[in-house]
Length: 287
Ligand code: BG6
Image (cartoon, rainbow, N blue to C red; front, side):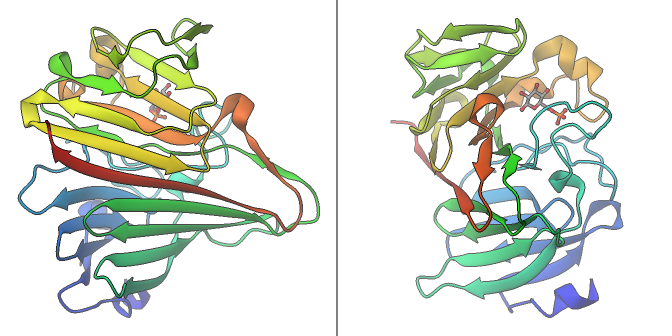
C-alpha cells in the first residue's frame, strides 16, 4: 500500500483499500474510469463515461490473496485450464504483481505498467491503458538459457444486458475445440447465439470479435494482435450453480470472449525472445 501510494497522480490515479483488504488502483481518464488490483494485476472495472460498465464482475467473487477474482480480466499465464495438481489457469492471476509506473500519456490516456515478481526463466510485463478504449498488453520475455513454452490468455468477462438476445460475430468459418464435447468442429454461424453452456477454443483466429447486445444497445469490439486463440465461454445454469464464487443467475448478464495462445497454439520462446499479446476493447452504440 505504502509503495503503491508513490504512484498516485491527483485526479488520475488513486490507491484505495479494495475488497478483502487488498489494495486497488482507481484510474480516471477524460473518457473513462477503471479499477485494477495488483493481486493478479486484475482489472475489475472499466467504464466509459455515460455508458454501462463494460466488464462483468460477479457479486459472489472472492477477494483473497490466495484466490482468483471472478469477473473483470483475469491474466492467464503460464498455462490455460487445468494442470494436474496445480492451480487452474496458472499462477499469474493469484500472484502479487508489482506496479512499476503510472503515467498520463501525452494524448491523455492513463497507462499502468505491472510486472510479475521475477523468475529466472521469464519476465512478464502487463500494460493497461485506460482512455477512450481499453488496451491490454501482456509481454513475456525469455530471460533464461533454455526454450520456454507457455500459454497465455486475457480472460475478459463482459457485462451484457441479456444473454438470450446476444450475438457474437467474427468467428464464422473458424475451427474450434468444443471443450464440453471434447470434439473439434467448424463454426458455421455468422452470429453465435446462446441457448446453453458454451465453452469453445477457436484456433488460428486473429480477427476482431464483436459482441452485439440489444438489451444494452451496445456493440463491444475485441481487436487483438499476437493471439491465435479466441475462447468463448458462458457457464449457463448448471455450471453457474456449481461455481461457488458465481451467482446462480449471473450467466444471464455476462459472456467471456478471451484472447490468447492456448492448447496447440502454446508459444515457445528461444532465449532472448519476447512475445506480445495485445487486446484493444472498444464500444459503440448498437447500430
Ligand atoms: C474458461 C474455460 O476460459 O474459463 C472454462 O474455457 C472455464 O472451461 C472458465 O470453466 C473459468 O475457469 P475458472 O478456473 O476461472 O473457473
